[in-house]
Image (cartoon, rainbow, N blue to C red; front, side):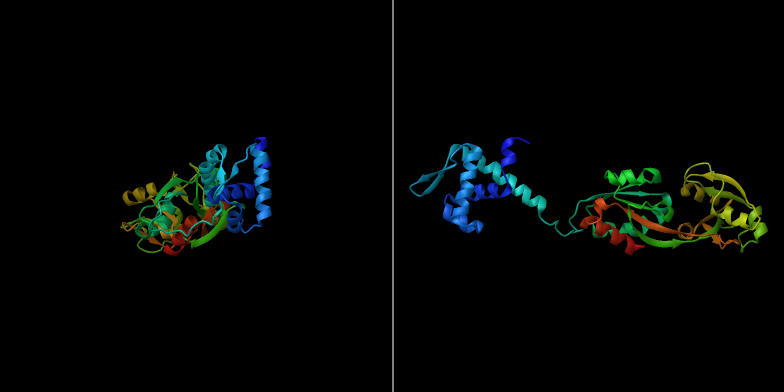
Length: 298
């Protein structure tokens, strides 16, 4: 910052802008709600800072010098820009807004959270855009801080203390298989359940143990996990074309009409689905509107 800027303050610049417009100390004082001596003091300081008279006496008030004329437009633009920057953010109008929101989700939350909200969202905010990115929990905090992600959906345990969060729903598990699966005509026994070949979704890749296995272990039982995949979408295709079964979230199973689901013979702890966002967008009207819309649409 140069020495001139250090000596200037906002009141001096506002006074100069009004003086250049009115070219009269008395009228400038009235507009600024200052006393005339105060405006004269400001003008004296401005003359000293700029090393120029700025305004000279004339037959009909004061006349700006060439230096003052060169300052007129840049000063007006700078003050207008500053006023826009510090003014309260206008109310969000979804009908005309053109925001782009970046949302981190799994293919599960794409189906259970975003899909129920999407058609209504497109109708309410037709000019907005949504970029859906794959959620990577270890990177989420940094991505939110950097503005790469505006909103994320994940289970409670994935939340960080520095995120704002809102509970969307509590999820439970059901046993899913193809429509005509011989073992899913009714609820299987625990022994039958363990004898079936299972598919597990392992977001980290390659895991063969999940919440169901923990519940079985507490009963001294074990199932056979024949296939581990990273995404829910592939599970749907596998179940429709094989005798494999899978413990899947109830809300997701309801989106798979070509499959059938039954209650499992073992109690498996469910989880709470959360919506996460960073302090960076906590008070932004557009982001607040989006969060409220999604929460109400589910």
